Amino acid sequence: MQGTHGDAGPFIGKDRWPTFLDFMRCARGKLICMGRRNYVKHAISEVRHAQQWKLCKQWTPRDSRCKKKLAGLRMEPKMVLQSIEKSRKEVTIYNQACEEACLVLPCQNLFYEDLAYGGKRQALLDATQRWLGAPPAKLHSRTVKMTGSNYSRSIPSFGAVEKAVRARYGAGSAEVWLLYVTDS
Image (cartoon, rainbow, N blue to C red):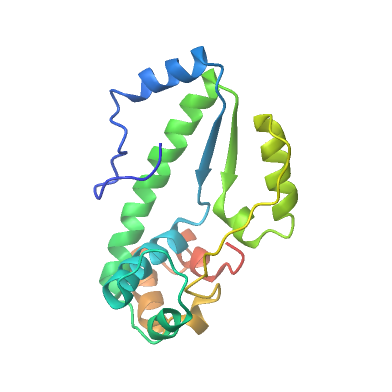
């Protein structure tokens, strides 16, 4: 399952998921469930991604000029709240699908946070390649992180976004806590 539709419905229709799992089981396939632990930062990334396209006309962030333009752009709290709700639904769907798949297939969970921030990134990638039955190869990415990990420093309208998140979910909520986690 890769990607989701705007209403948080997976591209793979629910009617196709059992067929896919049967195929993978018969082919003795292995499944990697790739997801995000921090759905709040994922939601902000989604908003930033849309802004990036509108501002720079590129989906893949490789241009430092685009990064500079994006750094000064404010985020509308309403858009962030909508994106958080969508992201929460996606996490629920993802967890359910992976849990179901792992009952019938060998599977491994990988998280963006471990690959993007983990000091043991290469060891994780090596272990995953070995698990798949391939000799470890050094993997590279040209992707540039567009928004820093500390949102209070990298998003000009962070105060307004934080205020909206606190108002919607409560000061002690997981959503507020996830806004401040800098390694996810």
